Amino acid sequence: MILRNIDDKFNKKAAGKDIHSESYLQTVWRRFKRHHLATVSLVVLVIVVGAALLAPIIAPYDPTEIAGPFAQPPSKEFWLGTDLIGRDMVSRLLYATRISLLVGVMATLISAVIGVILGLIAGYFGGVADMIIMRFTDMVMSFPYILLVLVAASIFKPGLWNIILILGFVDWPGIARLVRGNVLNLRETNFVKGNIVAGMPLRHILFSEILPNTVAPILVYATSVLALSILDEAALSFLGQGVQPPTASLGNMLNGAQSLTVLTSQPWLWIPPGLLIVIIVMAINFIGDALRDALDPNGGR
Image (cartoon, rainbow, N blue to C red; front, side, top):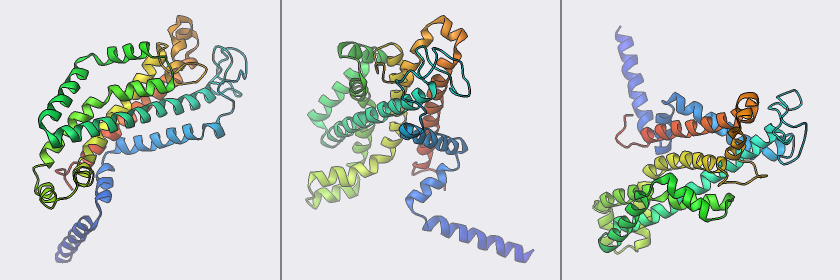
């Protein structure tokens, strides 16, 4: 009994030393792995992204090539069948995933850059700059989101890069408000005031001192923007205002599901892209939730 107690105390002490000696990234990863759904989602997302990136290698056919009979059901030759004009659904699905992920990632990057810059300026300088930026942000956020996207998509010519720019320039207000709130707290801290007193350049204070301490909430929020951008692309392409054929995206692959015949008699045309959208968006959301807990400085060990 005495030996068991000694062993328990020794193991706890060793575990405590391991926790204290691990790096910040190791701590984040250890906390992240506690969320089993997020870990599975990360694996699934890596597989999906890998398949999309390797589409030119693993796709059996060119996505725009007429490879078989029109609207053929799944078979040994065509695992997911062919579409209404005889193109292989597996090949189109791989390339469509590529396009949808590209739209989501690029739109998120654009909105993050705009939001971070405006949030830093508004939060650090305050005064007139803060008032102008925040009133403009409030004005953008006051419009119904989907209506703003649809109007912008109808004004500009539908296409891949136009959709990326539209979504990027519409999704930034949330990031700007988040960054501004964090900067307002950080600029009152001693290490920022110390840099100001020491005469450090503004660029160093904003991008070397304040921004690194704001990355965690930006990263968590960006996952929701990424999921939303993928859904928006799918919705716009489904309505004919997004990525245009013959370029395949998950949204325009669902376009044929507007027909009652396709919905009832040809489910292989809409179930795979629809299911893939659900899987990708759910995986990103689960990962975002786990990141929020893993990056929380007040979280448990």
